[in-house]
Image (tube, rainbow, N blue to C red; front, top):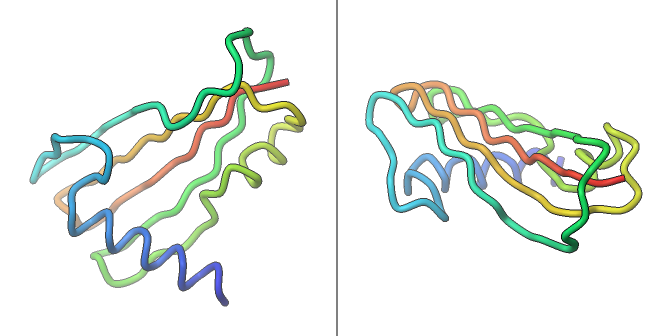
Length: 102
């Protein structure tokens, strides 16, 4: 239940502010991809993703944690983390964490 509430608050906050890290967002459509953290310079052999989806700014579901994305791809050593946010007129929003590692 705590994860659901956290995800709902995170998506609601992102929906209201456009995107926390990015200075740009579109009213009709947004598709932003940016880096979050770098822990090494070596190449990555695995990529994992985890996402949260928001509907009409009222309901948000999912687990966009780095741990979930790493587990999904079998990553034990993280090289870097990116995120991507897509929004369609603010009615349907997808926030994705992308983890690269080995």
